Image (cartoon, rainbow, N blue to C red; front, side, top):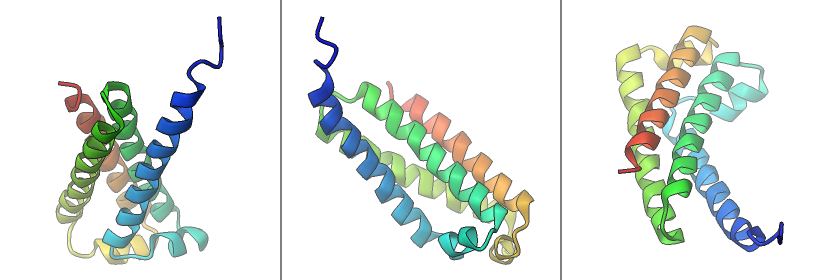
Amino acid sequence: MDHLATLPAFLTWFPLCALLLAAFAAVYIRVTPWAELRLIRAGNVAAAVSFSGAILGYALVVGSVMLHAVSRSDLIIWGIVGLVVQILAFFVARALLGGDLDTRMEEGQLSSGIMLASTSLAAGVLNAATMVF
C-alpha cells in the first residue's frame, strides 16, 4: 500500500484551505473597528479570544467544505459563502452587544471577547453543518 498516494491531493487542497483561512483573517481584521492584531500584541485577552473564536469558527466551515467539495472551485465558492456568513455573524453579535463594544474591546473586557468568540464558533458550527446538504 502506498502511504503517500494522497500526497498530491494534500499538496493542492491544504494550501487552498490555508489561503481561504488567511483571506478570512484579513477580511475579519479589516471589518472589526478595533485594531485586532495591535491589541493582541499588547496583551489584550479579549481581542485574542475574539479573534481566535473567529478563526476557529471559519476553520470549521473550511474543514466541512473541504470534506464535501467535489472540486477545488466548489471549495472556493463555498469557502467564500462561509466567509460572508461568518462576517455577518460578527455584525449580528456587534449589534446585540451594543454601541460601546468598540470601547469595551479596546479596554480588554473579556466578557465581550468571549461573546464574540462564542458567536463566531456557533455560526461556524451551523454554517459547516448546513453546507453538507
